[in-house]
Image (cartoon, rainbow, N blue to C red; front, top):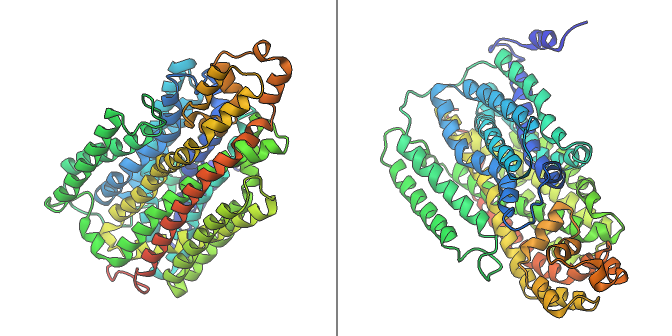
Length: 569
């Protein structure tokens, strides 16, 4: 019997072998897929994780655990990816990539072995999610540079397309995998990464070779410090901005949030100034003189914000309204939300590699611009359908969005990487990854804030009226009705029954209002019917903003110029 290790040893080839490029593609695709699945698998499995560590994330004081469980991985990846891409240029992209597999696997094993529960357990999970984020940043920062080194310019579209499809498609696949594994055992959410991490670690160390051009340069310590602290402060402030503060529904008036926003912006401006002065900058500002690079990254950032916000809103829409109205229990909605979003995943996986292959022949502009236009049209369609929609209309819009995302992602990434000189591929790949991951992180704060604004006008009256009509004391009902809407959103995101959660937190019992009223308030249909109108108000704001951002991205993509491959590539 041949062992997997022996099989991999036979598959490994030298760097000059014609098959080496496919070896590089298989390994980098595995790394990016594993990392991106890990990002979304946790989001859909949060209810099972918090039940497993015996912690209610909606109790006062516990919301921060919820936010950092969602955001820790994304934030660390966004902050470090450009630094690690630059280090790949200096010390070797394969070396940094291999290290990423090791760090990610160690973090996964530690998460499975979580020794505590309650707040201590949550802190353990958040800490090791951060470690996973460091490993993921190494993988994201260097995978595209390794592929660009391995493939000739006229074949990169297919390779980078498959890699990009793995990165974005993994975020959709994670929703389904998490929904399946979470109810079985929450440890499996993190354990599923371990065998792939071990396989990838061995395969990368055994098969990948350094063939890219290295740069003899010093590490830009000041730039790294300004960028890391500035971006972390900005993203953390935006994250905390969606939490209530004082009597406000959101925390934008919180002095710490304002300090983080101001300090983050000031530090990032200082970073941009410093990078134009130092001899060996970490963030090569001169690359923005390349129109294909700058336009591609602007489109990359805006599309990432729109796509990330859409993913969160669709999950809340399905879990909090549409699925319960069709008889699904709240605790089962996370899995079914992932299943009902499959049309978008299928379309993306179909059109991503195809558009990447075709962009090698015809250039990126038509595919990327056309794809973003389709995504924008899908956002408009989401506004026009009712909250309690017909599924096939919804599925058609998901499929349209998946087609557009697939048409954009692969050609855009290929165009960005083709525009880079060979000795700047690591830092350029890191910069591309920074815009992508920062956009995904920003989307949570931006779109949650917009949704809360949309809910704030009509949800308090709807909740108060609905509760008092079923026997809840006027003062208690008013208190629940005027509670920050973010609590209802988080409850829906977690697959909890929001009304049951709010009544329990207000210490209202069935004996207080009568069993009949209690059953009416906590059944599957009451909250979805109550929130449908206010939620649609929020959706109009959210998807209008997403459509506008996506069309701006499409315009940026249109002006990227004709097909361009850097002569130094």
